[in-house]
Image 1: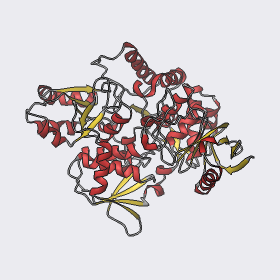
Image 2: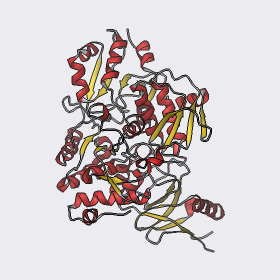
Image 3: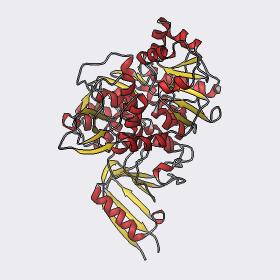
Image 4: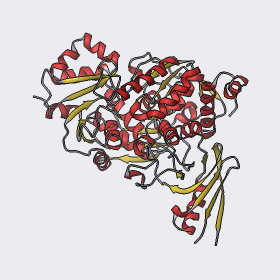
Length: 386
Length: 149
């Protein structure tokens, strides 16, 4: 990969150790993806914030980076382990280390959004803008629905792009690579957001290419379903983009029928019931919050229910009276965190949970060792309210 | 008796490392499937549960899933339970490349032809766990050796 003189200086350490480390990461990715050059990006979204996932070594790395690192573009931040303004009963050590991670990011100039749906709380740049999104669900959604361009970045590559304002020009950043060479042909009735999540998980697991076509899904798919589809793809594979399209004669096809849907559900559905209902992986946006509120019609949940959402969505819903109403229905709100990999739900506290998120289901089972009953939002409200 | 095979590879992260071969035919989600304290693969879906990454040369298609997997690779290195080297056989994804770059773990790519050579070598030489691999990405070569049969 060709580097300009200025980029060479950054790599050699003339602009500090953090910038040098960032260029080392970008050069390795350039080699891996056969990039010819680096291109400017206008927005970075960084993951690797939750102490539960990055641990002491991640904290130590960020301590070093924050000594002389500064972001060069607007940079937003993924969720951390808990709500900053509503401290949970976690160990003082966990809480202190989590706050130290947050401070390290703020020190280098990252905006403390603590959200995995930055596209719902910050303005979307104009079509075709190059960004660098680490959160896998956000990267897939950015390419597929938001008309902005990113590769499926890693926590470290997005941080490197934040620190340099650049990313290797490769893969999905190049227009020719954004046309699918393979298509998933849906043959099922996709009735709800869970069905879209299952389709996404199957797609990610099946398609080994960066871009896939998905045929026979509705033109009017709502945001919750699109987020579920993107999160499913991001969880199970390396694919970074789907294109909603009609079947093409010239493209390799994979059918997704009832059998494939049931097999995917059987893999992710690991419990018949659960002790806790959770919504939010990816976090709940305002539209979804309103939908839950509308469907509840003042009823009460018969099991504890946690909703994970960005702080800004919580504040807006509070203004509209939605928060107070849902709290009366038994909902507990947690901002700044996400169901996926939260330390607030683990095998010490729960054997099983109920959720409509395939992403939460995967990480709850594999990392938190908690079983999951997968149900759609409507099924959950029908089955667990009075 | 001694068998040797030399396979060309593409350097992604420079370095030389030796270790026993750990071959996965399925992609790995580092965040969901690996214990960063022990180096163990903790789920069955990768096809080699109860295996440990520590000191191995990990040969696998690519990583999948969470972007935080890059920190998982770094944590493995910090906890001294990382693979000594990695070789991707499908594509070198950004998570693996960035994780190895910051952890100074030699990383290489081999294409389908080279991968077939590797698999054929394993078939001839027997149990993969008994094989020692030297990955020299600066030379662009992988050396496979079985000490004795």
